[in-house]
Structures are given as structure tokens and as C-alpha cells.
Amino acid sequence: MTDTTSFAAAPSSTPAQQATPLPFDAVLFDCDGVLVDSEPITGAVLRDMLEERGWTLTHAEVMRIFVGKAVKDESALIEAQTGRPLTPQWFAEFWQRRNERLQAELVAIPGAPEAVRRIHAAYGGRIACASGADRGKIELQLRKIDLIDCFDGRYFSGHDQPRSKPYPDVYLHAAAALGVDPKRCAVVEDTVTGATAGVAAGATVFGYNPGGPGHSATTDLLAAGVTRVFGSMAEIADWLTRPAD
Image (cartoon, rainbow, N blue to C red; front, side):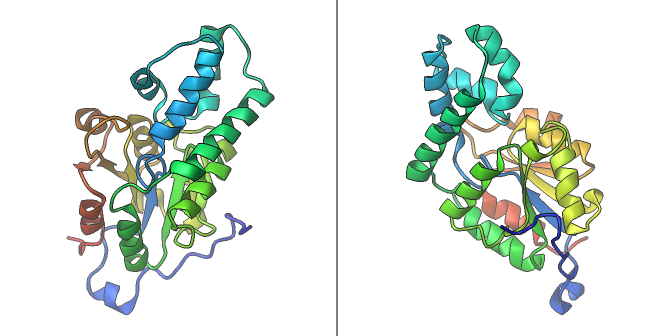
């Protein structure tokens, strides 16, 4: 597996890009809800496993409580509601059941693969995926939607950092791995938790909200410090690849 800490940053621009400079030096993507439509799948598995422990929630309640957050970071809440500790065995079963469902059912966010490839080409490969999910899930999902080549050696997990989102650690790590000042990075997020992390890293955060469950509301994203909210990934690609002012 590629060592994610040894990525050699690509040249900042090609000759064509020098004539029309880009607005940022790098683009950092969240994964769940931005690249892949995984939240309903993961939420359904979590709802079932919480019900097995005596905490019955609707799917909408699971989405409201847990979207954008790492399940491990909500251990205290789950243990308080169920009265039972979350053991390593419980997490192993959760990850196995979740991964089986993702492998069978996961699809890309509409327009995400095309948008990523446009941005990847425009930025000379200077993009990364910075997720609050565990590394195994990130890799499974990027392979499932055939984007692993765009992020090879440049996908990072909040599980590997001292703190996960809403803290900025994973975005700061991704920017450092690319050799880019985080203030010169664009971040694409769809939840308040992730947007808060991007803003705390000093990046310019763009929100994705196509409507419907699984994404934070536009008003909430703007309140968290998002610069602009878009309803499609094609719009985000247009904005990020336009010449800088």
C-alpha cells in the first residue's frame, strides 16, 4: 500500500494553467455524502445494531444524530443509551456488516466521479480525500466508485489522527502531505461537522447540499463558515476550475 506521508507534490501548474491560474493550490474532498452516497447504508446498519442493544431509533433519527460523525466518537452516547459497553468485538461486527452492505449497494454521488476527474486534471493531481471514516472504509468506497486512481496515496482517515472531525487534524494532515498551505486549499464538505473541521484548518470550505436527508441544511452549512453552497458536483467543479480573479 502506498505510504500516504511520502507523496511528492505535483507541480503547481502546467503551462496552460499558468495562463489561467486556478483559485486554489489544492482541493480536499470529504468522502461520505460528497463522493459516495453511503450515509443511508451505514445508518441502516447502525440502526439495526443499536436496536439489537435496546436503543430503538428511526432511520431519520439515526441520520440526525450520527451523520458526519465517526461512530467511535459517539461511544459514550451509545453506551449511555444502551447501558452496555462498546467492545472491540462490537466494532468488528459493525464494520463487517457495514462493509458487506457498502460493497453490495454503494453508488457514487451523482456527478462526483466526473467532477473529481475534472478537478484532478486541472490541479495536476493535487487533490486528496480527507474523511472522518476509518481507512478501510475510505479505500473500499473509492475502489467501488472507481476513483482510487485519483486519490492513490492521498486519502486520509480521521481515525489515524489525534482528533477526528470537527477538529481540523485530518485536513491539516492532508494539506501537509500535499505540501500545500491549508489556507490555499479548497475543502468540499456536506455536513456541519466536516465544514467546521475545514474552517478550523483555515481552508475555504464549499458545501454540497442537493436536498434530502443525509446532508446538513444550507443555512446550517453557511452558519458553520461555508463560503458557498452548491446543489451539484458539476457546479463545484465549474467553480474550482475557473480562472482565479
